[in-house]
Length: 194
Image (cartoon, rainbow, N blue to C red; front, side):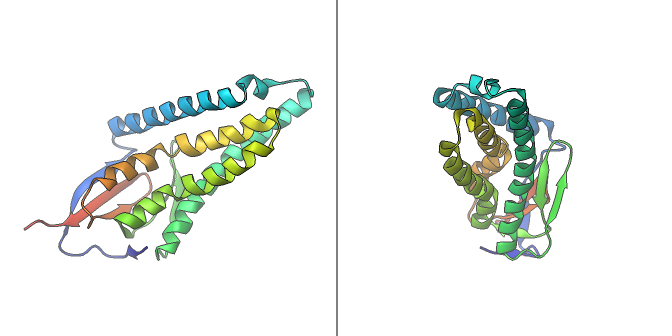
């Protein structure tokens, strides 16, 4: 995996996406996220009914603790998701990573350019890492804690709708593409056709 600090001279822009500015694209990505969340929520409900999340049999204190852990876990997950993107960028040779939160999206970005394989690895790394970790934890928690872990897994997959979208989109583009990811958007370049 490798990043490039400069764009080759014979490259030109072929595609760009900016989820802050392109409202239509933002709606598509958010719709994908909702569909993923609903499907996963239904699957989770088949494993452990969602009513277990609201179980008060151990008292109001235990109930409150579960929701406090859920909120803290979701916040921690968002940070850890972006850190995994950043670590993967560093593994590609990127020197400086930019982290941020726009109010709607958390992001990791840089001024570097990534080849197709590297960028898809960067995009999918948090889904894979945290998907495996959470899938390993979920079977070992009690039913009343199942949904706490499962909601974070649900966030892992539905919250990565943008990562999944660009992975599919970029997979169909030429092999020579270079992608610059500046956080909430990215620009794709390819060698000029003669």
